[in-house]
Amino acid sequence: MKKIWIITKRELSSYFDSLIAYVMIILFLGMSGFFTWLFGNTVFLINQASLQVFFGISYWTLFFFIPAITMRSLAEESRSGTIELLSTKAVSDWDIVLGKFLSNLILVAIALACTIPYYITVSMLGNVDHGATIGGYFGLLLMSSMYISIGIFSSSMTNNQIVAFLMALFIGIFFQILFDVMASNFTGTLGGIFDFLSARSHFESISRGVVDSRDILYYLTFIFGGLVLSETMLSKRNWKH
Amino acid sequence: MASIVVENLTKKYGDQKAVDDISFEVKPGEVVGFLGPNGAGKSTTMRMITCYMAPTHGSIQVEGMMSDKDPEEIKKKIGYLPETNPLYSDMAIIDYLKFCAEIQGVEAGLVNSRIRDMVDKCGLSFERHKKINELSKGYRQRVGLAQAMIHDPDVLILDEPTSGLDPNQIVEIRKLIKELGKEKTVILSSHILSEVEATCDRILIINRGKIVADGTSDTLRQQAQGQELISIKIDAENDKAKKALLGLASVEKVNEDENKPDFFLVQSKPDLSSRKDIFDLCVKNKWYLLEMTSIETKLEDVFREVTN
Image 1 (cartoon, rainbow over the protein chains, first blue to last red):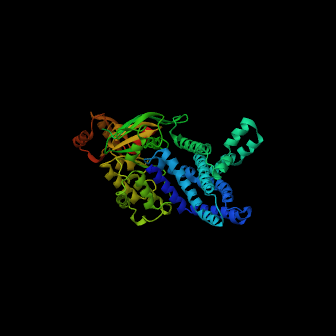
Image 2: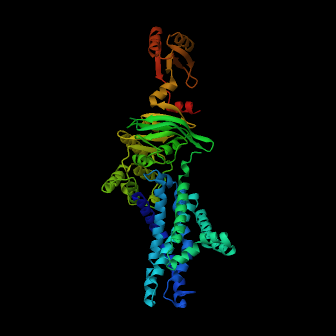
Image 3: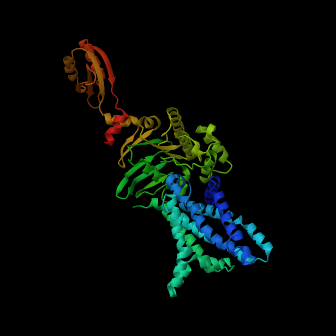
């Protein structure tokens, strides 16, 4: 556990030293703020003291931003060879993968924490559904964890950051839209399966404040699956061909 | 008890055997040099000892622990400098050493004093506030050495520790390795023969994944040489002298040296020395013995012989 935290700390400080963290936070706040308050279907237009608009926007901005921050995690280590250095320190491959995962999650959590003023502002405008707001943040964190996990897996497959970024987007787009589209094209069991695979329905029910164990299980499955695959890719060098 | 025991180690990359059935032991406090041409399997062997990758067959035991059972405990005991010396180049030296110390389990109270020690020992004092990507190759190599030693490991594995250093630094690093070798087990690899000869107690020559020679530099030289070879110059008629030399009981072969006129290369019979006999011969015939040098086989010759 301590080792994971040491790796997480190093990753985080490299995000903040290299401006990646600031760029990501500012862009995220800029995009979500712009669409929440100024342009399109804003909070003022829907005439409700609710952050649903913000959650809907963040659902998409995070989808694009997360691959951009996870793409370097393992790809850069294997390109520069530092993976050899890291894995010959007294850590396991799981420590490395979890350290990377946690650092990305904390970065996203910091970005989300910066939007708490939105919540305060809206709550001054009228009666906010606190349950739905907490659910919305919780849903965003779960969704981010899933895409981070997918992003780290993509990053573990290549030593090219751009390939890692595109691969993460490619895998992500299935959960983000394609399964949703397929679900509406098929009926019966197949339609049900696609509907279950689509991240949108799970996210929407959580962000309405309805926390169902099936939705949480859905996210945990993909988080865990992505991490297991990343660890497998990382320990591939141990395979005895 | 041996510090490192390697038994029947084999590593295959696809069909190619990078390391082929290697076995050896390293005693505590021994400095062992891996010598071999490029692609001989030196780095692969080191990578397996440091638990970076698992062998295809065979076993590795470090400080009494098996590499397939306690890799994390083994890694704590080992300090490793990889061949390419990868470093997190966006970090400052001190931060980087701190990270390495923490992750290798150095006690929180000792971290700072260990860092200070390493900065002094590796000559990084003037550069200590710089970021790693601002350093020259030689200084990066020092940082690589510092991170390998930061947790005071029992075993040091250094893959080409002096590559990229200038002559003064090479001398310093060699001195450092010798000093460390007094209390630690050190394995280093190199393809510079003089370096291995100067720093190592024992040399393993590896070629195409196999150990082709194992011993101190002296024993290796003797093995390769076998019989004494001396070069002499005698102030006498060449034919006469040659005949007389061949008549000596201890002499096997006499050749005229192609490179130096009037010099003879005299090879003694196995386990015999002909130097005294030659001197006596000259005294008897009243010849002047102008020069006599014994020709030593150089480590370069040994190396060429076993790796070709």
